[in-house]
Image 1 (cartoon, helix red, strand yellow):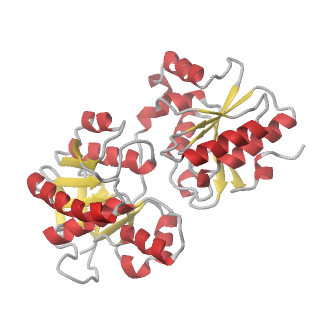
Image 2 (cartoon, helix red, strand yellow):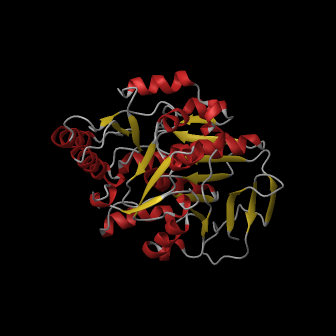
Image 3 (tube, helix red, strand yellow):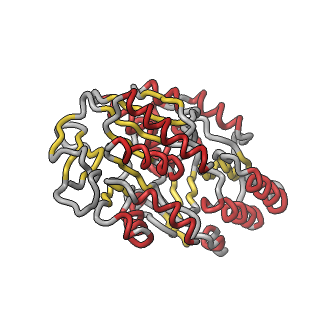
Length: 372
């Protein structure tokens, strides 16, 4: 059977079978019955390195909350992170686990640890959301005879044979969830042999109540504005994204400098995102800001305190991505009625609903700043 996981039909959260699949081995979705009703009582484990910033991390928490809401036991094996509190508040259960390790010897030991954890918690499905823990999860699932699900959250760096093999783990699930048709096409192009016909597109959702302007108090907005060192008269251009090169920070810094040079006043460009250990990239951005920032529209860096507060504060949201995936901040800005700027360089299907969207070519600074 092939299954589409985490669909939400009228009757509530269910696991839905979608017809026969070709596959090999005794583990080809052996744990998925043809039709499963509401998931009350099901024990489902998600595994991810950490629960800090990022789309995969946010989705992990959201899915755990959805599972808990229908009576499932939503387990998350992870090192920890600042979203653990929210996970627990939504009814999920944090299982401390060294899921971030990429050391082959440690990963081999982690297979045994995860097997023991699954036995103790009587896990029925393992759902992997990141590559290193996915290899661990695959080993544990196969030895325990458990269904193994992966979510392919977007493009991965690296095109060498070794890196493609490493990335292919996300296409080896009994069910491979792609968060968009762009991602599904990417999986079929890079990992057709591993994925077969098991790819299912399930678009990511989010709780729009988080971005309700009524729910975002003025005190929260002003506190965030002060933390960003934004003057009262300045308009905020926000790039809310992890500090990684493909998010396009360099492009925005260059564009900000050009806007300043052309006399665009009162702009505060904020690069708000976690570095996630990328100290060299942090230093590179700081040096570029120093070289191109000057005064006026000089970018400044800071982490958003709350999604709703940060989007409420922004006048314009920039997503200068080299390969655009589902962008939660884009949704927030649309809900708040702010301007949204997207870059074309990947999957833009999630942003097409936004009214007044300006599409630009990824990586081309001149497209960010119109000619005078």
